[in-house]
Length: 182
Image 1 (spheres, rainbow, N blue to C red):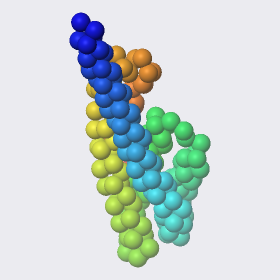
Image 2 (tube, rainbow, N blue to C red):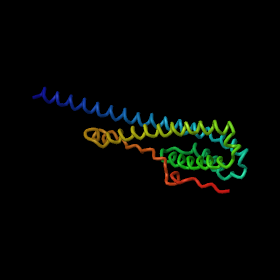
Image 3 (cartoon, rainbow, N blue to C red):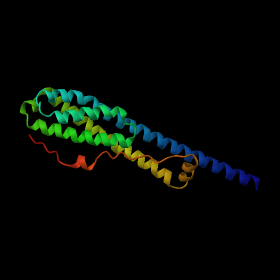
């Protein structure tokens, strides 16, 4: 009887260790994937001053949009949570769309090599952000599911594993068409 009890305890202990390690691995995967998004968002914010300076030379009266982009870039350093960075990302995306719409009205800007290169770099970065966001959200979904299903939900409660937020950067404002008026 004592041996059976010992075997059951060893099995339960192994199950506990496996569940705990699985939760830790999933939580670390979420952190790693967020880091990838953060790197791409930072890269995009680093490209903005060059884009602003290029556009300034051609579109003198577009100061409101350029000022907003500068303000968003400045506030990036203050954003700490995924939700704050998601809101900044949505605002930035909307303002970048406005810049591209403005460029349509300035043929010499559209043909400017610096502008074209920056536009291409930003476009590539946007694709990387979208891809990273998908990978991050998949990792969050997997992690959050582990927290909710038996038997890992018991281990998650005991060791205070918290659900992670999905990165939902798109707002209603970002989904609207850009209006440009002169």
